[in-house]
Amino acid sequence: MTGVQTCALPISRGEPAVAPLDRAAVDTTIRALADEASEGVGPAWSPRLRDAIGSRLAATGDKLEKGLQAVDLGGRLPVWVTLVRLLHWLLLLAAVGGLVWWGVAAVQGSTGDLGKVAGLPLPAALGLGGLVLGLLLSVIGRALVRGLARQRADQADEALRGVVHQVLDSDVVQPLRSELASYTAFRRGVEAARG
Image 1 (cartoon, rainbow, N blue to C red):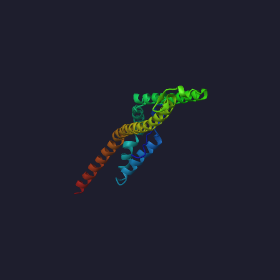
Image 2 (cartoon, helix red, strand yellow):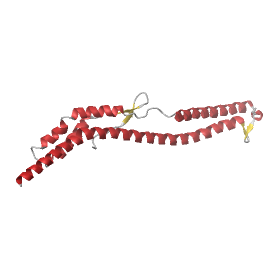
Image 3 (cartoon, rainbow, N blue to C red):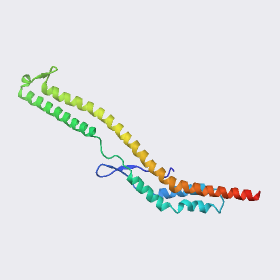
Image 4 (tube, rainbow, N blue to C red):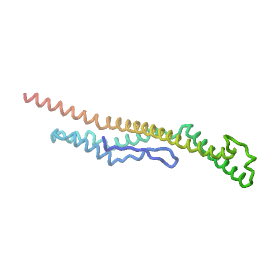
């Protein structure tokens, strides 16, 4: 059914939550399906097909709402995300600290007294190393987080669609199939009686 749409929305605590169900869209979509299924079955059976699922609209909406709200959207981030954030802050502190240290030493005229690393004064190496490693970590971290987000979105989408499929199959498709099977058996009986 294309009329039933679900999506995850962030809530104030930063954890994802399912958006409220648009019951009007659900009801309209289910009624349209019943109307489509009842075309060509004759005036006596059309109301039976519509009633087979129309009488369950409120219950179907409730089941969808409960099922969708029960889906775990994976709100907690893995530990590695926290570690990357911490490392990023440490690299920022190293960059700022090293550059400030180098600047103070330059103002005081004591850059010659500083230790050397790879031909650079230690504070400059610390500052530039923090900047370069911070930028590199930023690029790698974004790619990893993007992949994690894509994976979680796919898992949430699959779980939400599973709930929708299960509820609509039991509350809409199966009752329609049952009524259509009754109609088909009736038509066969009428054709057999006609001879």
